[in-house]
Length: 164
Image (cartoon, rainbow, N blue to C red):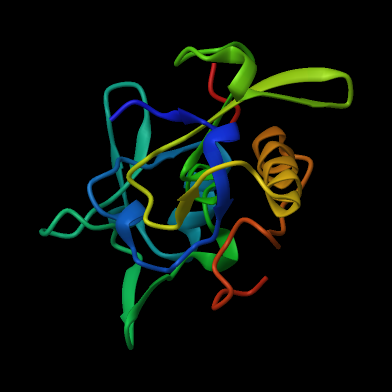
């Protein structure tokens, strides 16, 4: 499905449904890969031709996805990869999926274009509320690497890249 501009999202919250950890390839940057291999082993990751990914279980889910009662939790919460922190939001320097006026978000006098993966179950469609402004800002800061800790952009059950 084609990502939708953020201005079509009334609110978003992580429901800990695990959908983001099923069927997606998580690209790791070098430091993320090193930290995961040091803490676990090489089997937690898999090499691609030009990228390194988190490995998957036989059913296609992330090796770090665990069921906890009726929720799915990330076993990498303490070192969660940036790509995982950003999902379902995608941050670009230029409009990628059209509708630039609805996708644009300006912070620090810089324009970013934010899109949302419509497969996320935590999305409520409509006109964005004030909460979304804080959430979008946090996603951009995480994408830029100026923020590590998540407050608005993760599930309440958890401890609290720019795509080009």
